[in-house]
View (cartoon, rainbow, N blue to C red):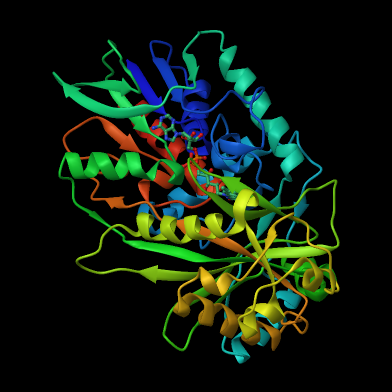
Length: 453
Ligand SMILES: Cc1cc2nc3c(=O)[nH]c(=O)nc-3n(C[C@H](O)[C@H](O)[C@H](O)COP(=O)(O)OP(=O)(O)OC[C@H]3O[C@@H](n4cnc5c(N)ncnc54)[C@H](O)[C@@H]3O)c2cc1C
């Protein structure tokens, strides 16, 4: 059996791990990845999200154990399936317990959690509770290198990795599938193809769905900012929850939420093909004085518009243009609320020091009015539970965005109709994090192994 995998992020690793652990010997798996191998990959430019390990490689490796966060696997495949694979995925990402210097959130039964949740609900905010394991950026990279080494040195030589190879199209030929690369056509025909291109590869899957007229759902994009405050402001909550996932409905009925909280973390840049967005990290062994988290506003579109990716990219690129070389705009909360530009001198009056070197500017010139208003309303609402969140000296960095992949109408879980092509991980539209993307890859591998090919 010949299988091609496009992409080598966490979903592909989940798939490969199950194949590696299986008894199947008569399989050849060719992995095509547009980025680099983990020993050459750098956390700058495209290397920050592309390459073996995928988008999460330089993340802070926050692994959500609860089904409510990071995707819809438990709704899509059922709770029992979720329970089985969550254990397998956690074993994979801790190298079967070998990595033990990890941080854990409190358990949901902890009475302190219920007290915090009550406070949010009483103040018109809802909170999604979840248990986390925090691996840390430093550990995660060790793990990814170790996994790559293990698969490359497989005693049955089942796995071949090809880096700097971008797949641009697929062709069906006599029940098999051919891959087309940039400026090159493969002569190989594969029995099965696994698309594991993540959210960064959403254009590729959008193209295939439209080309093969496969129906899909899902047309939304999240736009917003990375927000940075003193670690002391959020400490009481992050010491218990580690991450607070809070949601709010704005006056215009737009959903606003916190995302990816990094206690004592660092704001960072994320570089795509032709744009720069903002993100955040935290390390187990390196701490800052600040906490950062994303504030995202969901924008859903209806007919005739069905291209939220282009909408989001236009806003991001506008920020990049205004910010010049640095690509990211930083603004004090006070300046944001009164609609004036931050300057170096205004930034220096703040009570905290920014953790990212960005261009002082005015995000009101970039974000749509609905987005900017919803962000301000949300910060004020959060302040009722977390005093200090609306300090005039806090920083907003923009633009942060989260894209959602279109959800194909699958014939059976993750399989496209009438062809042996599976779409796993964030590209499927059903996952949004390391754990659940890994689980989707593991599930598809097990289904293929169960059928014997
Ligand atoms: C900065 C950052 C921080 C994050 N932090 C966390 C976190 O703490 N916890 C968490 O659970 N999740 C986190 N996430 C999300 C998580 O990384 C993703 O949900 C997860 O990596 C998705 O896995 P995937 O395999 O679907 O896609 P990815 O990991 O994105 O991998 C896709 C791979 O496919 C390659 N590719 C794409 N298109 C092609 C093509 N046409 N040809 C060849 N190769 C291609 C890409 O180069 C990439 O390496 C973070 C994401 C980012 C960007």
